Image (cartoon, rainbow, N blue to C red; front, side, top):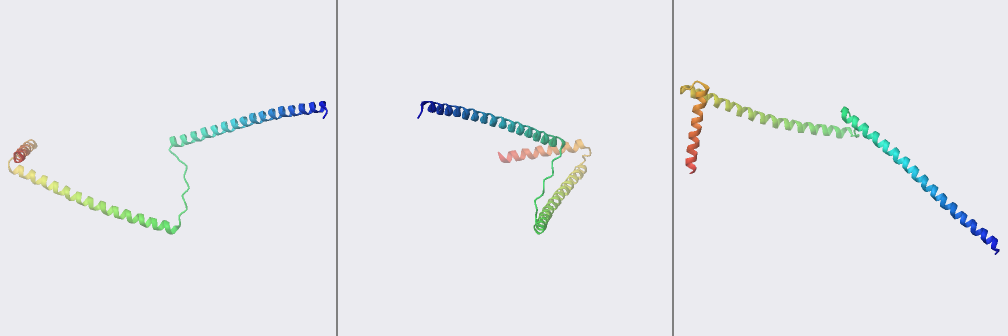
Length: 149
């Protein structure tokens, strides 16, 4: 091979390598620029979304969510089951309220009986009644302390 052609081939190869390096550098620079634009756009979208969510929280309104589709048979069955559970809970509550009412009536009756008893003994003012009740309570405490000792 002719030394001049060989030299020209080597020069063209060197030039091609240089061109390839420059091309790759440009591609990398373009990729980073595109990535920066994407990141910037993503950040803007994220800030906008956060701002909208904050405004919804502050205003107390939230977007309505779509309800999942439920077959009418299942929906009716769930409603019946829920109604039965509510009815059972209401019945329990009624029983509790009746027991509380009975207890209240008993306490009121005891209070009235005690008041009548104290009045029959000659204690008519509230101070006199409280004093005798306090005295009786202390006597009961002393008796219980003596029985424990």
